[in-house]
Amino acid sequence: MSEIGGETPLVIEVSWEACSQAGGIYTVLRTKCAAGLELCGDHYCLFGPYHEAAAKIEFEPEPQDGLWGEVVDEVAQTGVKLHLGRWIVTGMPRVVLVDLNSIRPQIPKYAADFWKTLGVSQPGRDSETEEHIAFGKVVADLLGCVRRRLPGRSLLAQCHEWQGAAAIPILKHNDARIPTIFTTHATLVGRSLSAANQNIYGNLDAIDPLAVAREHGIESRYRVERAATECCDVFTTVSGITGQEAAHFLGRQPDFLLPNGLNVQRSAAAPHEFQNLHQKCKQKIHEFTIGHFFPSYTFDLSKTLYFFVAGRYEYRNKGIDVFIEALDELNRRLKAESTGVTVVAFVIARAPYHAYNIEVLNRQAMLHELKGTCEVIEEQMGERLFRTVIEGRLPKIDDLLEAYNRVRLQRMIHAWHEAEGNPSIVTHDLVDGSHDPVLQHLAKMNLHNTVDDPVKLVFHPQFIKMTSPILGMEYDDFVRGSNLGVFPSYYEPWGYTPMEAIVRGIPAITSDLSGFGMYLKDRFPDHDSNGMYVTRRRDVSFADSVYQVAGWMHSMTKMSLRDRIRLRGRVESYAEYFDWSQMARNYHAARRAALEKYHPDREFNFSADGV
Image (cartoon, rainbow, N blue to C red):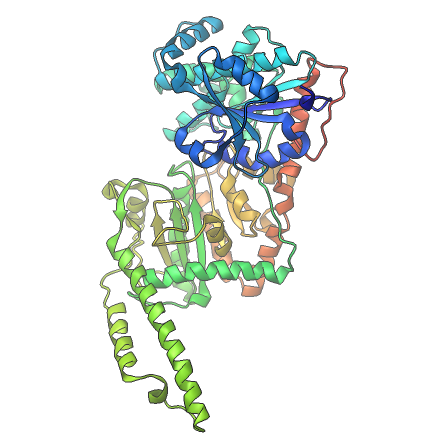
């Protein structure tokens, strides 16, 4: 086992989203791997469940040799099928994936044993929770196996969210003496209450978490979450606001806060090249806008700004309601000013749909056909121009554009402008469009994409991707080409979307009820003046929040091009503060604290620049 020698701790991260995307924790783990490997190298490993569809894309098997080969072989003898390999992300970290199908008949017994370990009656049958408990049982066995093979080695397990946390009370019950950290990214009770549109933060002391868990049918999950909180050596959350929830709902203040980061790859290019990248990406959005709106009416693209909200379709939690109300207010202001500025606002949130909207597809197809035809004619005109000039005369229109091409263009212009009605708000045919919250709210505000509305709306109920026939570009490029990201969340334990905008130099609005918003307020007093806006949602009225967001959006429309360029430069200058090389210092402190509980006299090979 010499490959794991020395005093660098063996760090194992456990998560249901290791090598398999289910939610936001996937982004945390995927982006943080490089920082973990920079410090620990092969002393860093992840445990997760095996999902075949995800594994085909993200997992690379490797030979079962060395320490991990022995561990996998031993645990596999109990009937568990394990997969040893590498996660195909930056750094290629080692992963051990548990195939729960191989032990499915034993899962009810594992669950029953777990509840006996906690000393509580089994709170009803929940097959999903039982799977997570079985996963925790196998993880505890794997960790115990590693401990037996490395009795004097510094070993630490960090479990993320309740789905990966059942191993902690099992290890505690077994007296495994393995330092553990439990990181909750959002409390179950908090998520349930926010989904039910209940006031959380103004009523924390009066909330009975167990009663809420029973009412919402999540008692078994809540008990796993609470047991992990009580049994872990170090308890952590991702933000101060989630820490407040944890203190009330889980009965323990977090020992450390572990804010999330990103792999920030800042360009070493000159500032003007950074701005050129924004313009290049914005041109792609312009192309969509031309295809979507210009068959009905036109507006000045040089005076057009792009605002957006993106994320899970949680209408209230993500602040989509605030966004729409603020756009209505902005529409009124721009109508009164008549400056010629147009704002195209995007709502990017997955919703059930049948297919792409045929009219929207036709408009984009016509645009591409028109563009292709013009490019062919342009090439022909270049040749005809050359021939005319070498004949010693200046060309006339008939010299450049032959009759056939003139007819082609006239027909295409006629077809291009024969569209009837206003451009569609939604780009897809929704499964239940008549009851969709976004469409209902826009109808209430009388925002219908009319020619007289300076604010236009596009609801794209699918994540943006390059292969889309409607908005075919990568999400990162869409963000870079936009002018403002708007994320005034009501419930957001952290909030990656505004951070993703900021590190790409795009101003963003978050809120003081999001973990990231609180992080900005605590560490950057001049955040608003530098394009990192934090709207007030705590202890203020909904109308006040709307007015503040509308004010920031309005100020963006009044900026000159030079002012917007300067603002993007100031925003991008903060990118390095959100890189994992900075954020991982908090992980370093939490892990040291957990290890020192078992090894108070040891020196650990941690650095301030890694995990």
